[in-house]
Image 1 (cartoon, rainbow, N blue to C red):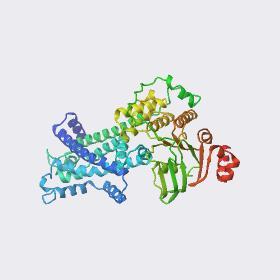
Image 2: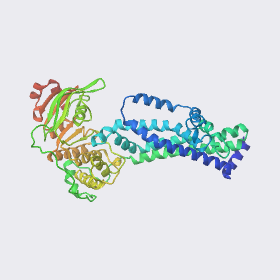
Image 3: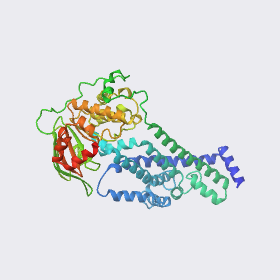
Image 4: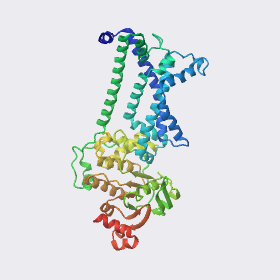
Length: 508
């Protein structure tokens, strides 16, 4: 054994021509197969991650079954296709480089497709609504999510190459293990071991282990790279303000990146608040998630200029109502009506940012609505300046603090020039300073004529910002009052005892 190992190491260190040829051929076959499989598998998997169609469950079941398909079975199937009596026999590929590439591509394709599908589907469940809110359809959403999960997908590609380069069954069946022509590392190891030529087999085995080790180290490096790119800053260099208003007042004294002027062709007009009639109307609208009801026959109207707060316990239906108003959900019964040409934007509790610069994250929604690159960039910088972030416009959005990311999300929403801005717990995960910053920005947006509808557990925030309060419980609207009346315990108790108890409990 030691003699064989010593000879094997000598073959490696002396760069034996036969050894080098086998290794080069093996890497070429697997790399070519992975390029082909990944080109199709990434696209197909990303599409399956967001697509919803009849029979999707059956397709995924077949796909997951193919993951466990033995390599010799794949080799047999490809052999039957390429044999003289097979449908592709006329190509003359059997026992050739092309046949081995095809076999490994077929073997790796289900793996790439399934893992890409799962990665994109998980990302879509977490962030798809935000991209849909910005105007991305299913196909574009799948592309954006795949781009955003590129580090995870890169590990999928590396793992796929490792699967291809280390398999033996398929390339043995369709390649024939012909010396100097179709012999690769795995088939050569099997043959040389059976012949008793252990030094060559050991040398090839050691090199195969080195290839697999290199692939694993590359996966670790990619994951480390991803984590280092997502380190959240601690707002170094930014003085913690005593209040959000001070932050906005100090924006002009910050070291700002020059803000490009917005071209005059940018349409910034909103609907006139003086046009009579509501902006949004729900008429006996009900919403269900599967068989679980979320909203029950809800009827209400949102008028221009209002600042409507949605309050209630967790699971009361606040987020569901916002999603229904924004068109992210379709009512099971009843209807949701928006005024013609109404512009809406939504701020989510945990804003999603792509792995890109801050200004590009703001410009994303503008680009999805058809705005040109120059105009979108100019308006994105203007929006970041508006929320006091133009000095970090070039910084990756994922490196911003929680408060900065929420302000960036507000900039993205403001850049769309909405008539109605919907906000789902906009300050729920922020520290007190960041909360004051976001509240100050919300007040500024309301002064600009934007109608606000926001969900909040913070009754102090509701008092400061709202003109009207809607209390929900288990999907039912139990109170809909002006803010002063809602916080008048006598008046509120006359409308809803449940709402009065809720307010009392929250204020204790």
